[in-house]
Image (cartoon, rainbow, N blue to C red):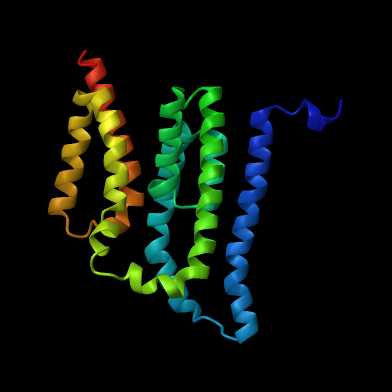
Amino acid sequence: MSEKKNMTYLESVHRDGKVWGIALLILIVAFPIACCLIFGAVPQWKALAQGLFATLPMYWAVGIVEIFTYVPMLGAGGTYLSFVTGNISNLKLPCAVDAMERANVKPSSEEGEIISTISIAVSSIVTTIIIIIGVVLIIPLTPILESPALKPAFDMILPALFGGLAVVFIAKNAKLSIAPIILMLVLFIFVPALNAGTVGIMVPVGVLFTILVARIMYKKGML
């Protein structure tokens, strides 16, 4: 038997995930380099370094936290695929969680690993198709999409999505949900800097806080 045939599913997932992750990194870096070469525009290195030093620490911290947060929830395959395709907290995570919930499988199981990966893959394909359709129809649909009558509906898409998922999980363990709900309400009400753009950061924070609270409640015999 060849080495490829002897390779387990998870080993192949990690192999392919690393390959596509490195390929994505090369493509991301290649675009600004190509722009510099094509247009002959060289950035001001001092200003670039100052901007990177101001923003990189936050993104490094969020990136590390997201790995420890999303891997137990999405599995190895789902995590690799989500990191390559993006939009995890807004789309990939809700799709995977809902799919595993409907299939009645646990995220840490082999079945959960497969269901999560399939759901994220289908979500990525559907998203790509919708984007293509949107690009083709953007001009004729612009007057409709910018209609004042539809604006409230578009503003509520994300809250409606997470609200539907929240009802399911809150119903399963209402006691555990109280602490993270209070934390998020307090943060978003009393910290003006937090808004819809910080959801990607606050999801890992909420998950870690919930795990800590769950541990404390379990130790005290409340769960």
